[in-house]
Length: 134
Image (cartoon, rainbow, N blue to C red; front, top):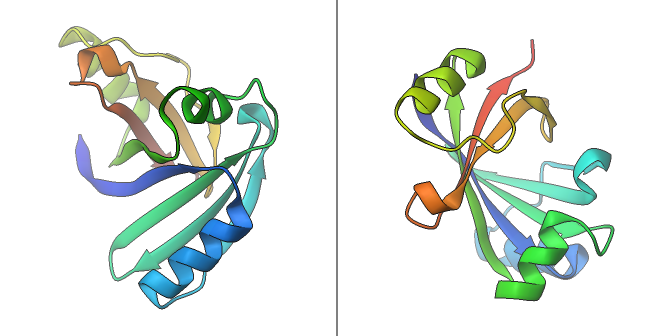
């Protein structure tokens, strides 16, 4: 079951510049930065109350973020929903007709297991499902 919006992912060309901008905008510094080698990105996370923003910078021109920016420019890349049981949610959504891009969850940023739904079936929005790794 989807429990809440976990974060909004924003693709950026330059993470240092975006960190400065969002620090000024949100009046808080990022609480975490990390590299996700499997996705060829470096991320920063900001949190204001219950709202989390993930900034993503490509570390390789072949990464999904680099391709996204090349095609669409900087901006909102995905919306992530927290789930209690990612495997059950994948099966439920497949049964509802959604296209799951990776049926086996993989390790993502912020200590989460993640999978994505194809934007062609979600009104053009890349949807991420994420479950905390305990």
